Length: 188
Image 1 (cartoon, rainbow, N blue to C red):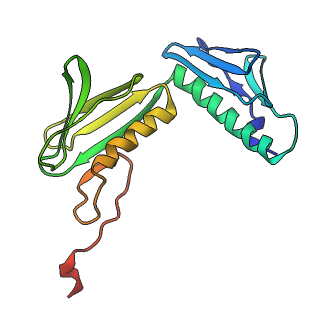
Image 2: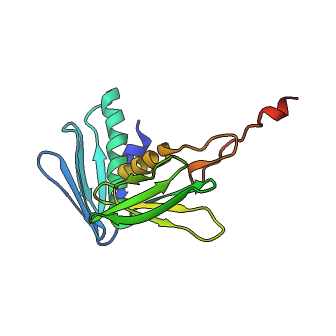
């Protein structure tokens, strides 16, 4: 029995939910609109201001899709009402992050110790802010309504220079802990 799939999804004020005959779900809210194609075996209904997902049988496939679909719809409802945010820290001497405009596009310009700057163009629906406070490491804030897209963009930026274990330099999530290693001199 899917425990997650059985939970109803409360719909916040200002959020509208619509499902078509072909199981195409649309969620609209103050921050935007998201759409999802639900598996045709599952049924999605609106009951008493809550979204309820149900499955036809106890097959393993239906159980897996039940919980997945419910989670995806819950993420959509939260995304259009509140949105999602990921924060990254850029740690290292001379490492910089700056949100600029290049040829009319919003671009994140990164200096990560390479011989050239890196320009990252965020996809549609993603906003990137870079703040630098004197005496602190630059911080990149990624916001959007699609949870998967926000996480994917954060992972791509982190992959440009992942944190290394000896000095801790690189791009890391704000709440990430990087386990440090001793250098060669500790072996004596």
